[in-house]
Every structure is written in C-alpha cells, then in structure tokens.
Length: 414
Image 1 (cartoon, rainbow, N blue to C red):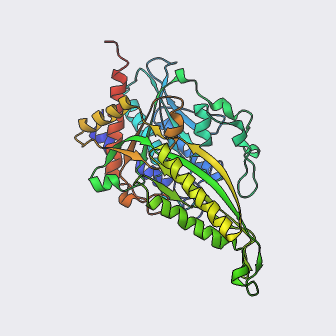
Image 2 (spheres, one colour; image 1 turned 45 degrees about the vertical axis):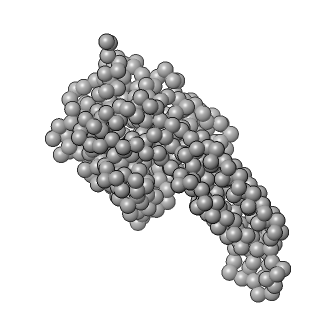
Image 3 (cartoon, rainbow, N blue to C red; image 1 turned 90 degrees about the vertical axis):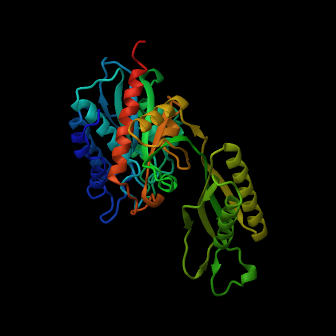
C-alpha cells in the first residue's frame, strides 16, 4: 500500500513545521496556539485544505473540532476515527498533537491515491482543547465527542476574562457527541513525550494505556506585611508555605514507584510586590500513576502534608479538584493489530505506558482505542526543542496503514 513515491512525497513533518509560525501561532517568535484563537482558526483553515486535497469532505462540529471524512464502501458506514489535537501549550514544540493529525491525513491520502475504500469510513479529527492552555479545563472538545462532557464545565473564562460562551454556542456544544454505533474504534498517533523509545532504539511503540491523573488548584492564604518591618518570627508568608508544600509533593513522588509523578506547573502570587510579604498565592498540583490506587494514595499523602504545613505556619489552605481522570487501558485486540503492523514492515514491536494524558483516554468512553507512540529526540516535549525525525514519522505512517488494512480484513465475510 505504501509506495516509494508515497514516501518521497511524505508531508506530515513539514506540515507540522509550517503550522509552527504566524499566522498559525498566537506568538511572533514561538509556537502558542490556544483554542479558538485567531491562530487556531487559521490552522483549521489550512488543515481543511490538506484534508480536501487528500480526498476528504470537511466539516466543523459544534465543539469547533475540524473533521475530515473519507467514505467507506458504503456511504453510511461507521468510522475509524484517527485523531489528535491542534492546540498547544505556550512556547510549544511543533509536533505534540499536530503530528497525529497529519499522519491521519497522510494515511487517507495514500488510500485515496490508490482509490482504495475500506468497509468503514475514516474520519480524521483535529481536536481543539486537549492542553487546556486557554480555559481552565482540558479536553473539552474530545469530551464533547465522547458524550462525557458536563455542561457545567463550559462555564469558563480565559485569563483575559473572555468566556467560552462568547466564542461558541455552548448550548449546542454537546451535540458534537457521536453515537457509539457510528464509530468502529479510535486510533491516535502521538510523539512519546518521553525517552523510552529512544533508549530502546525504536521508532515507534504500541501504547498499553494512559496513566490515571488527578489535578488540583491550591490556594494558600497568609497575611501581607511590609518586607522591611515584619519580623521573621511574626510572618505568615504564603509563598514560603507554598515552597515547602511544593518540595513535600516532590518528596512523596520521589519515594514512590517509577510511574508515580507529581508536578507543580503553575504558580501565582496575588498582588505580589518586591517589598511585601506575600499574603496569598496559588498553584496547581498534578499527580499521576499507572494505577489509580497508587495515584490516590500519593495524592492523599501530599494533601495531608499540605494541611500539616499550613497548620504549622498558621496559613489558610483551600484545595479544589480540577479533574480526576482514571487510567485508560488501550484495547488488547487493537494493540495486537499495531504490533502485527509493526512486525510486517520489519520493525521490532514494543509496548509502553503513557504517563501523559491524551484525547484517547477520553474517547475510550465512546469506543475501543489504540495509540501509537513515535520517538521524540531526547524525550523532550512541551518545549521548542521538541524534534521528530521524518524517517520515524514515515515508519508510523506505514504502521498505521497496516493497522487500517488489518482492521478492514476483520470486516470481510469469512
């Protein structure tokens, strides 16, 4: 199915690089593409062109996902959904999210060029809000598609006070949900965002599942005071307490198993000034593990230590859970198809767990899911240094096409 000509015209990596610059980035000198920003909408327009060139019809749903559909042998056939996300973190790399979309488009382009139709349709989804870098809730658009979205989650505003309701029709948003009968399964290709494949000397790997995640917003309250006149033993310094809490979270995670991680990724000092003892601050806490019991036990211990620190320092403490995402195992039969497709092109199959969250974990509520990881140099991600070798991406494309062929064979009569 994959010819030498197809590989010589491979565009997935170069297209990711094209979308890393204005007008497809909100920033002039780095990549930042937030959900529903002008850069996001411009990137959708370019993607729509590429989807159409690959032979797909193109539409947007009520959650502002962009969808390209390549019909199967029957016009109303259920679809294999291939997807990933178009939005990015701030100061991002080029490949986290878009590479999976581009590989889906390339796979359809190969089928279309060979006039090959499968017994199912193929739909390529460009999800919009996986990262949660604009609104304080991640994966809104895939939750809408999976039918698991709580409408209350749409009552959000960005850091500039712009409400989601000002940008989209939130009453219609849940209508993006797909019926299970309309979907065969979900496949997502994504950079690994870690060093395992590189350490193994492998271009791709089959994901066994996605780690369980907990995320909190923590607010610490003290008493603001003059930095020059407030004696050290009289201070109720919110930032000093926060610093001790951050180290406590790190110590709990370091003492646990290798798959347990705890991260403080956002820190804010409210009304901070160089000559003021901080009176209030807030931070995020992200706790993950391959098993929900290990994750929950670690989070409980971290929050116990936070309360202990707050009591000793006479600080206020408020904890709000932002989301609780369970571990999401991939479908065993689909994992076998990915492994078989990997072997068929002369590559060594390898399985690994994902510590990062992906739209696949949301889509698992709708249909069976599979994920293919692609080697990322140095394991670096969410960083401009993120890099994918085009040859590795070509390997991923060939595995995806083999997966599609095998999936199609399962639909043929015995």
